[in-house]
Image (tube, rainbow over all chains, first blue to last red; front, side, top):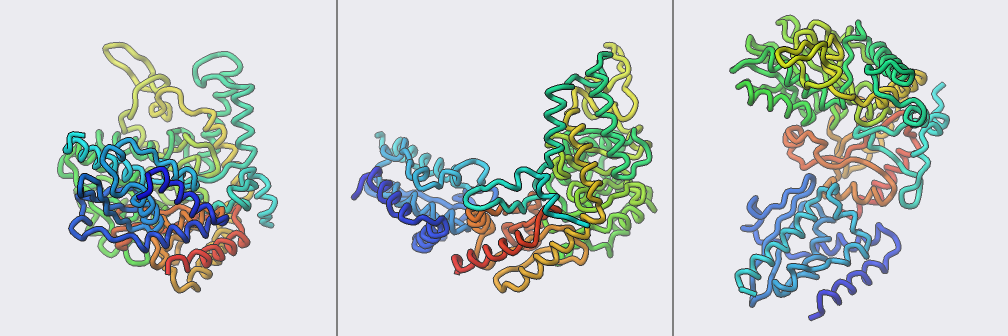
Amino acid sequence: MSSIQETQNQIVEEINIFDDWMDKYNYIIELAKDLPLIDAQHKTNQYLIDGCQSKVWINADLVDEKVHYTADSDAIITKGIIALLIRVMNDRTPSELVDIDLFFLEEIGLKENLSPNRANGLVAMIKQMKLYALAFKTKLGQ
Amino acid sequence: MFDVTAIRSDFPILNRTVYKRPLVYFDNGATTQKPKIVLDVLEKYYLENNSNIHRAVHHLSQQCTDAYEASRKTIQQYIGAKKVEEIVFTSGTTESINLVAFSFGEAFVNSGDEILISYLEHHSNIVPWQLMAERKGAVIKTIPMNEKGELVLDDLEKLLTKKTKIVTLGHVSNALGTINPVKQIIEKAHQKNIPVLVDGAQAVQHMKVDVQDLDADFYVFSGHKVFGPTGIGVLYGKEEWLENLPPYKGGGDMIKRVSFEKTTYADLPLKFEAGTTHYIGAIGLKVALDYVQSIGLNAISAYENELRLYLEKALNSIEEIKIYGTSEYKAATVSFGLKGAHPSDVGTLLNRLDIAVRTGSHCTQPLMEYYGIPGTVRASLAFYNTKEEIDYFVESLKRVIPMFS
């Protein structure tokens, strides 16, 4: 399995092949279509991160001491970005995730999706993903 | 003759490129751009004339005070108020509504009383009343809407009860563009001696408003949505109402005499203008209103209506698009959904095509819940927009649609 660094580099390379932003978004939308859906029992208000505009549901399980995320969004671009985050963050140890530096978002030009005024729940989602990792880390006594 | 090319050259920002091509700014419902003459007057006052108003005998203070009061006079004339004392400067529509909700509530609302609010309202014309209602034990009731995004007035008589203390509604819906029949509603309310507040935030930039003809008791709007600076707004209130409302904020400029035993308040309108107001903003607002009037509100309404119908016709020809707000009476705002796409997705993609639209609930969540949708894409137009921009907008939507199939 590639490292967090390597996976992010791969994503940057894949997306920056496209010059046109419409093509980049098309790619992100395709990724969203492939994202395994969150289990129905986790698509409830308890797992909802309510942005002002789009909704995001996220759950994390600890499998063999690694964090496994599942997520969904009602907005497809948000969902595509989630798919990228999951690709980078899934099946890592909690310790690796607590202080993760998600540099790829900036390098593919999606940093503006992370400014608070986008209100799309992404910032809150990343925070929640890290919180899950922190909780698991505490649980494992790492 | 309405010369949109000449008008556009008055707005420097319209020449800028965001990513690749000149900005298409269709988010005028959120805020409008400013003509250069407004920016110039702000700069001039800060550079050459700045001094606090109503306070000092020196020349600069006199100059600023005169310009500030001249702005009040322009606003009086712009909305057809009877007296200049009926014009209060606030920070914007939201503060104007909060002021009335608070002060009116303190003076006139008791436990069990009712506040009647239209279903189409922006949160800023809902929440201040809820805060007051909670404080006073009053009840919020709503005027219902229909599928076309119009208010349903069939039961208005019944909704205006002996307990109704005030009616509040928007002149034009920010989310859908519907022009509400405020004159008719005011007439009905007045038959029962109930005052009405009209939120004109989405009206004064699009059409001629005459508060005396409407017979509105309160009329509020923001400077920044009518080509003026941010941070300055207006509360119009009939003199007899404003006289009878207690102050909203205490501070300098709103007092006659202060002692620790008893303070007496200034006469209207200063009673409601505590502290240093955004006086340079007010001076800028005058220039903006003068500018709008130099083009002419009738010409603006006619041109914008032509633009809106042109846009609606184009959108209606696209199968995947559904327009929300289909009243016959609309200002230049078109709200719609795109099949299979979340509004925020559409906004994100249009952004990359240099188009600025607003997506989401537009601070009208009850209205979105009525339609059962998370939000809409809203194109809100101004008189500096063009049919060529609409063509590009529609072409861009057609480019985006296949991405969601």
